[in-house]
Length: 120
Image: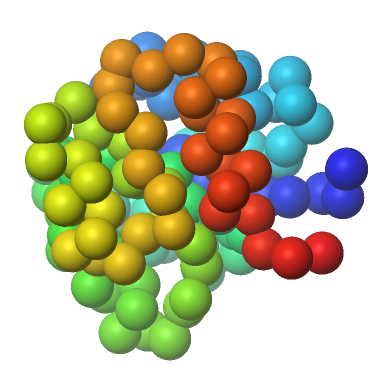
């Protein structure tokens, strides 16, 4: 598998750690951010190939993050991670490549990430 860089953005440390561990098992290069503002800073340092994004976060939520990301000209695929029943609609609102509903299993997460992978 080519080196794919993924940024996991979630305000819950346990979720970030669990998601990161799952992705690292698959060979992905993973970084984490606790909110949208930190994620925007991280993107300038390390250009991710895919962003896994929680929608409800303090400081800068998923909608604000996605809007600012696109305003800056980044077309990085986003996978929405949320426990909300409106996950599919929210993913559509920000033109996400995929979504995964919390709580999710290993296979669901990997499938969502694989569907968002840029062509190699």
